[in-house]
Length: 108
Ligand code: FES
Picture 1: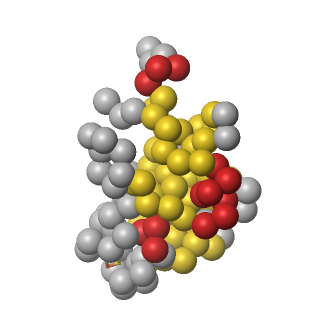
Picture 2: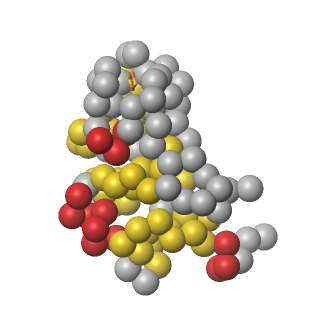
């Protein structure tokens, strides 16, 4: 069972809401993208599964992010690849709001 101490703070919720997407580089994890879409926060791996593009630089709309390089789309909630050439999902991390910050549980 995980404890409160295992929460990993990624960024300010207000900052993520202002920008819509932010890249963060937590120690010991791959770069992550924090998204704000339609009032909800989402956290995924930042690196596209098709190439090396940063998904936090993509366009966010309707619960999806469109990769800035080849326009593959990923579901922000599940990480599923939803349009070619993206075929492999990206990892998602449940976003937790705590004291004005977006956090995740540190993955094992
Ligand atoms: S690098 Fe993202 S779709 Fe190609």
